[in-house]
Length: 391
Image 1: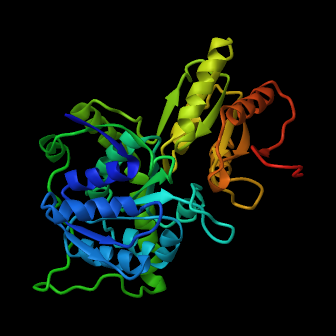
Image 2 (image 1 turned 135 degrees about the vertical axis):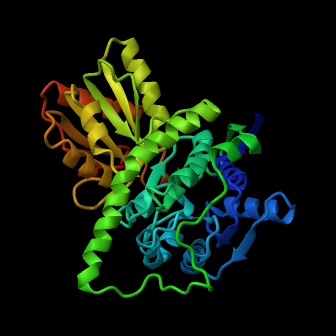
């Protein structure tokens, strides 16, 4: 095993190289560009035997990825924000055609009043496209989740694309220690890609046709079942990865100090490390606080959340995105998942547009959830870190 001090963008690029990616369609966009730049260097230097295809837009990137994957090769690409939005039309073609493309999305704000800093509104807007979505906490998980994404996507019980989501700039341009697996280890964990239903000129076929009402509903149902069945494969892949590399991430969710917790926060992405720190502070004071780390937004961990919250009095849900409907997308889905569990659920929006989430903000979140656990009336959804008098 080697150790490198690299950014999460570079960690993802190394993972794509170790996975022996064969085609990399690309279009630059901040803060993702470092990923495809690094892959271009690997290919240029002869370290990766792959085709690097510059495109004229992200829409073209995903179109090329679809063609390459349907042609029977392992495909990786990366994007961010407006780039992901420009792919929107083609994103929906990938899952329904059961193409196991892996894509990194470096989360960044989207639309008018947008910036180049982290926000989850880009990927959250695509959560119902049929792509599996995993959100990572640090640079090591960025590398590991990308490797696991290939194994998951290519499993014959799944055959679905996977989006690996990482915080723009907080991870993409910040360096950390990353343990680099050896190529032989990765080859054992991730065998060569064997396509299931590739295009072959010798056996002509049509994919992605217009489908009439007499078949469309069944196709959608099959896709829904595939997303649902991926849950068990996610758990298996995590166990296989732990056996090979000694690191486990818990599958769909991970928990911290939840054994006797009375109240907890649910977080995703880089806010999780800060929440873990606050839990330790509260535990030192005798508080029964805990933490749930949401890793996969799709498939959504309904069963696992209900089990983790079975004895909780209150759960706060962190969102780094807004649905502009009274709360964030994670909050609304968690609240729906726990509708039959006697746990008070509160929403907490912070870090929008890349604003720092401070220890004070996280302590404030836990204070509100603790009050809710004692039966006090609190706001259903609180925005933390707002400037000025905002009511």
